[in-house]
Length: 157
Image (cartoon, rainbow, N blue to C red; front, top):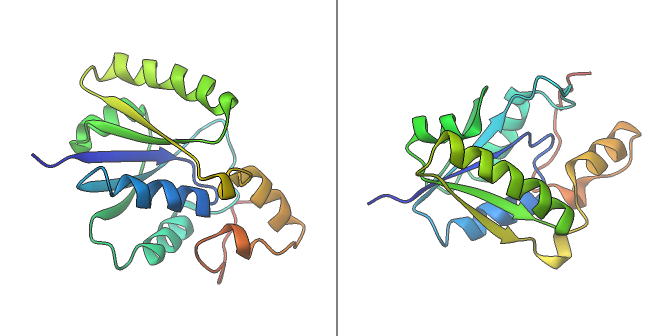
């Protein structure tokens, strides 16, 4: 049986913390699908095609990782992809409260779906996409937070 995990998120941008969750997830699952979700309530900073390209470059030597994007309910998309697991990283108790609620909703949509939480590596716990976006927007160096170079970056703003 192929154990497929869906790692959903806005990944705006995809950080070293996200990379760490994927790499650790590969120790538990046969395949990890990184799924960039479209949130109609949020305006993206980095375009989805650009993030897909950068994430793809990050995992170009790992055939068990694929990158996709979706709209709609995460639980339904996981079912469409044949994933029985959602992979999520937790930096703190606030993340847990939010992710726990979301996991219950996903389980309602797809009863066979289990959410697996990985505690963030302490060295990466301070990294958040929103902080990286803000730093980048004002021309601060964000290279230490990202597992790829921001070459020819494309923003949605």
